[in-house]
Length: 370
Image (cartoon, rainbow, N blue to C red; front, side):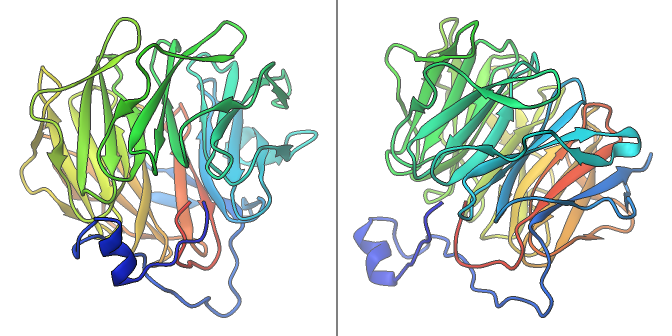
């Protein structure tokens, strides 16, 4: 994303009010590392153990990571000027080796990467480009541009999600305060859905589709809430009853557990996670004990495919928070958490076997959101 410079006057002029979350300033630590992908093994209790000598080099300011559903490849977007996607093979033991031809070109300031449920396509949101790059995944993990790519979105798209059937895709547009919806063709090409885009809150930055393909949720960073929608048969979105729902300060990332019972939102400004029970109509109800404390400047979160654990990347405290999920959706800190990270852990993903966590490290934090 573009570098953001705030003042109280500019915030008020935007109509965000005096309580809007402001990015923290942080000096670079001596000998800062980062610009890589760290790998951890997940223990039976959710504890993380670094895999020795497993760090893999990425591009500048890596900010999003995705693993294909077959557990073969890892993809990382590099948004700090590299404007590309690093691709890796997953070797035995979870280690990564570069895919031939990696990195692959994207558009201006890629901020998010997703793999479709069939593991045939990769989509990259280009924030300053105002579009989505689409690729076919080659047999060796290489990325081949889809005909017609890139596909236009609204202004400053930040993140994208695909429904579990692989039919529809949704991208949140920060400046336009809405959600672009697309149908995914057999070739991977994106076609806008009729009546798209759909209104969201202020500065939407994260989107998720629940595993039952009934609901879509959007984290709105400036309005400190979550928009909830019913997903229609044609991919259109209709607000769920009671939407939007209050979150903490600066909600930045949202996820739904594999059972579709609970939703979790990382509050970047509040150093916390808001946890919700998903009602039958898509409405969100806070679970007991919510919100739950994280490290400093949390960004993205991920869950294991069995729905046992939640992991959060804390950029400023340089660590990973880990929690077990209770039967009521409440989070309990796993013994040993937080687990030491590299410099600036920003995004993470769990492989489909639930054995490994891959963490993208941006290096020294600075007042920029990507």
